[in-house]
Every structure is written in C-alpha cells, then in structure tokens.
Length: 236
Image (tube, rainbow, N blue to C red; front, side, top):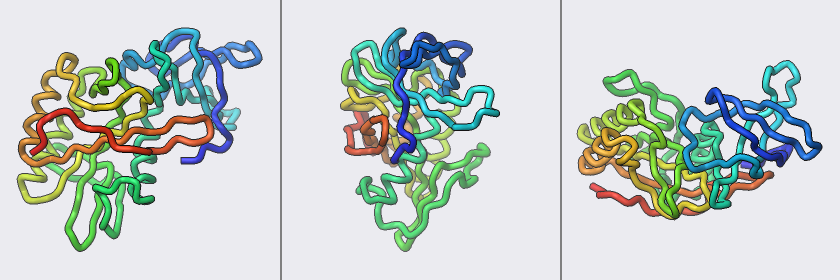
C-alpha cells in the first residue's frame, strides 16, 4: 500500500480518551490527532518516542490527522491504524503475496453471514468453492511473541464461533492475523488477557478453521504485508 503523501514524523506525547493522541510536530507544535484503535495498545507505544501520522488534507475535519505508526518501548514499530488491516490483506491476496489464498475468481467485502448477525471481511469464491476470511490486526508483543487480543474481545470470540460453524458445514474458513509490528515473529492467543477467546480459538482450529499470519513492512511511504509468520497453536 503506497502512502501518498508520505506519513509525517512527530513525537507521541500521550494517548487518551481512547481515540485521541497529542503529538509534537517537527516544528515543535503540539497537535491533537485521531487515534484509530479501539484496543488497549498495550506495549506498542511510549511517551516522547517517534510516531508517524497521516494528513487527510481536510480542514473541516475536527481532527484532520490520524496516528498510523508508533514506537514501542523496545524500539520496534507498530501499525496502530486498525482500519488499514483489511486493505493490506486485500492487496496482499490480490497481488499473490498470500499463497494460501490464491486460485479464487472473486473477492467480496463485508458479506453478511452466520447465525449471530456477522459480516465476514472477505468472501473469496471460485471453482474450488467459497472461502470466508476474517482479519484481525495484531500489535501486542511480548518479546518476539505476537498476542491477540490486547483486551477482552467478545466480538472476536463471536467471529470464531461463526467460522467454526462454516467449516462444520463443509465451507473453508480462515482467520487471518495481520501483524503490524516489526518485532513479532510468531502469533498466538493472548490467553491471560482473554481466556474465552483463547478457548474459542482452540475449538475453532480443532474443527478445521485455518489460521494464517503475515507480517507487515512498515514505512512512511509504504505499508505492505511481506512475509508469513508461524501461528503457535494446534492446527486442525
């Protein structure tokens, strides 16, 4: 995903009220920007460290700038704009980067499905049948371990139940972890944070839900999925 104009570097001073952040620009000005992340952002930012933000160019927006990349306490980079995850995955599938999801003719977004009023991020279709793909953004790291979720996620567990029902009916279903963190080398469930999600994930993979994880390369002028990372957990 090319970013034009490129992201602007600043210093992240604080994140508050969940959706706001104060940033010091290179000129020394303090601006308040939008933080597009509903999670805890645990371990993926620190005060007075470099960050990068985008500019909508719309002066009518209350907060025209958006926080995109932060620096972790260990000095790694984390992509905290969760709305980019689906775009990154779609681009990677379309460009053939994700070998596991090739061979389909069409890709549809936000398709309604399931018994719990859900929407799948991507529905791939072709001669080989359908494949439902649910995307999750991963930014929580403990060392090289990537963990999801970073806060209790009833919605995440619901999606796992829906995916499990799909595979039990004979349809291919995939949970895709979009890893926007330069330090993460493996991905697993954050069982200590959300044991219910971890249990639902275990049940889903035992039933046949596939888990795929790819890490993003993060830069001011481009963010793209570049390589797979192993999922730590029982695969069905």
